[in-house]
Image 1 (cartoon, rainbow, N blue to C red):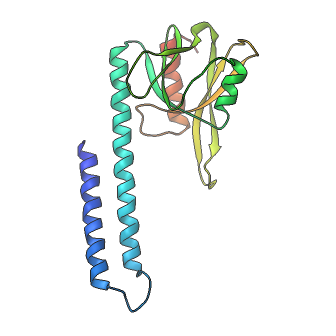
Image 2 (cartoon, one colour):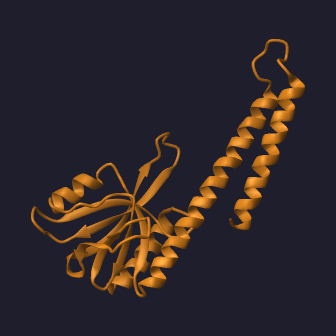
Image 3 (tube, rainbow, N blue to C red):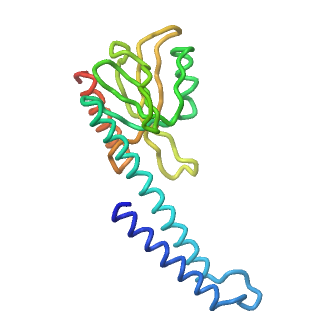
Length: 197
């Protein structure tokens, strides 16, 4: 584990232990449910636990993408997750194409390839370089509507049923997932594909 993950894990353990000690000291609190202090301790412990898991998942994803990039020089890798419309978009573009998400997408001078996130096997070609028309960013509100989640749209030339516009959530080595990060990712992808802006 990395130092940041170890620190978050240590803080989580400390807050968890403090919450247990507080629960023992408060006892049943004369019939009341949980006191405010105990609720706060549980909430803080849970928050640090989630942060610890998220940090470790992000570190592993970055390491996996870096390993693939080193194995396949000149290829830019991102981890892609399906949006609600991704499966329908892919089927409309190419009915026989099957891509399972989440996956790692590789972009190079030959086109777009789908790779397993388990680092096993070879990639499956999705689109040739000549079929990739361009990229753009999109956003959708989060479930509570207080923020936006950003992704990319891959524009593809007509294949069997017509042109494709595939919406994907992507993550690479950048810590942020905002519009600026998506535009940087697109720039790196276009460079790997040899597309000039």
